[in-house]
Length: 232
Image (cartoon, rainbow, N blue to C red):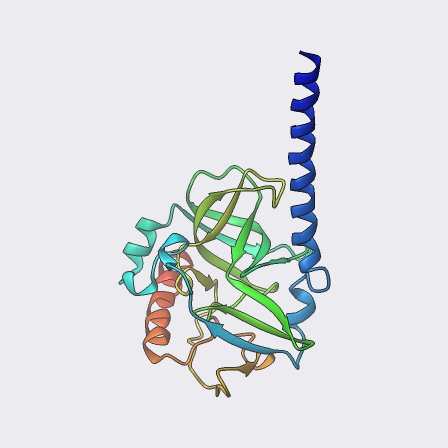
């Protein structure tokens, strides 16, 4: 019996050690660029938009499947007005940035908290000693100076934060709208080899040259602001 207990404890120790090594390797892989704020204010860094390589429906609702605000509201369990917590580090993970936001107002969902963590599909990678920013479908990361209307879905936390849940946009393009900003976006920038200097597009709601995406976003934005901000 004593030998059996020792064997069981040995297995437990090996498993725990393996988990520690895995966690260490994950943090090590991003050791030099873990805070997205170190990159988004760099005037020389380039940006590119990428398409989802796998089935996007595993993580997001397809943008083309959303025809109007009513549909977006129905498939979004959480709708809030929020602002980036500029005192918190915005941690980079593979394919995403973890952003803590302060909740200003809850429009939909059972939330009893003052803040939440949101996975934004915006990332930074290094290649040939150069850093690049990229995002899914032209999603642009939240600006620390603005408040946003967010359409979100909840996922269970996996030890990324102190909270029980993390939230992510319902779609890549149609789930984030700057509050009180009625200015419509346009595609007045040029892509060179599918890239652009991020500094030139950092204030755009979405980073896209696709006229259909831009028209759809602008229409949704006007309807969101009219309903949630009473802006005509």
